[in-house]
Image (cartoon, rainbow, N blue to C red; front, top):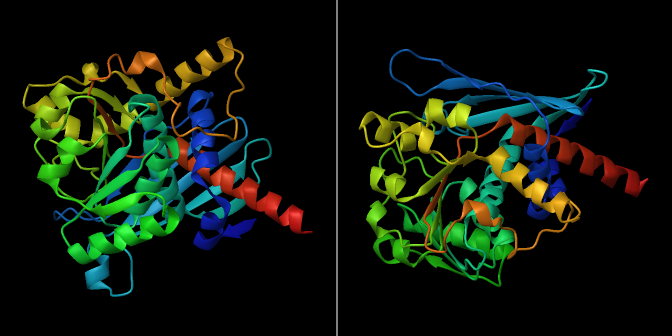
Length: 343
């Protein structure tokens, strides 16, 4: 069994191949039970341990992670989240690899959002607004820029030093894009795509600021009583999710409007697998090659999901074990190919 580190993960992955691997994964027969999140404290802390299993005809994967949000302050040098993914061969049951799950989570979370954007954002989207300056933020920016012709990015965070660092990290990978600190009141109406990856328990901006035609993306919150967007935005948007079974159990972005009596979960138009299956069916019917390694940054869009250029779309993601499965297998395969090429 191979032990695959975070450095190996970063060496193996790129967004073009990962997004296409996810598109194929979400369109194919597979199983992913509701993930199990276990609170570690009954005293109101958010400390938790979670298990996310998934399998298909090729592989079985289970991700386990610990989440201790106060860990960095209570135990200097420690992270708030630690994660590992165990990958098995489906045919033999043999363990194949133990893979750093934290790095995989950054890549697959961003790639899932970009995959959804490839169906839901306008194909001419050029202006990207990022809320958040954590480790995930540069991944989100780079992933969205892989599927749309982004030429301007604005970054918003609570700390200017962290904003500048995030801008520099993105700029290092994409020096061709104009990347600057942002301002919510100015840049929310300006943006074609708004991607939010924060720990904020309350809405980041008024939904009334969002312009017609904008695609919005929320990945930071996993709690029933918290949300990154307000009810007004949910009501004005066509709503999509990565996984109904998980979002409907965890995401305050939708659950709080339901509690207010202003939204029904049945109004969610589709989950990610439905978006991908519709695309695959369309490709096959038009004799296109599905699941290729090439990903256009301007032409990945299916008309039925965006009914008008003026539609506001909202994609809420809390994470899917299917995405972990696809990303872990891709890492394992690509590292194997690299090893073979060097022998």
